[in-house]
Length: 308
Image (tube, rainbow, N blue to C red; front, side, top):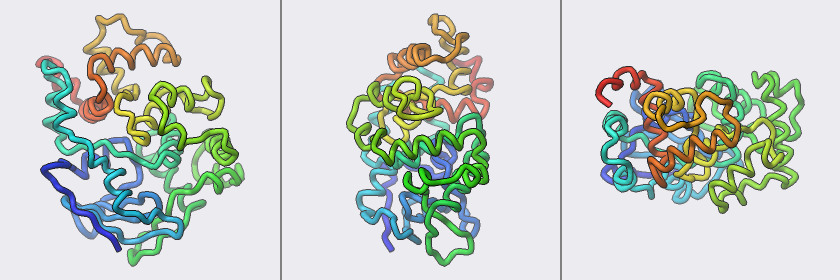
């Protein structure tokens, strides 16, 4: 089994903040060892401690190059201090976010799993998303052999989900999302949706490729889901996903900018708001969004309303 040691001074990694930040859904606390986490990355079951990562199991089709997988997934090449230095110096609220959530990292996930995860997230809370993903993995993924009592599974391939029956997908608690999952899986399998190609494209081109009403290559994928995939899978750090929490922040602190906040979030309106945030936070706006989201959903707007 393979292992990896974090350089804390360089990576500034906090597992609790990162795995609970809403960007990823398959990490769970290891009950037998407080402070440790278990999660599946590309068919590998990993145990994460404060300073290290240990591989404790792998599915038959699991990714094997650990030296490539771990740095990519945990975005270890990102210099967070340099990234934070690009943010506006007078943004007191964001400075508070950086201080309160030190070690919150932007992950770089496998695109297929990330896309399916956020399709499952549509109109759902985090516990419901986790359940859907685990159900899909148990039903259509591969068992990961470990010595643990809990069973773990790899995420299903596009091939397995493209062949899935409606009844089986509904049994995974997908609800109306089963149509989205099956359609997109078929598109990936026939090559109509090439996720590898998106990784080399610009942010705007990638968004256009993923949004259903623009490309018609996906089904059920709106700007928010596409933005999440661009940020959390393709590491396009200028992406700035807009959800109910972020919109609350924008309504409170950007109400004088004539943004289309009271209109439906069409692709045009979504882009207008996102562009305004990119002008404010620059090329690393996605890191700002990750920190703002964590602060706001924990009640940060109420706590900081007077001082900002």
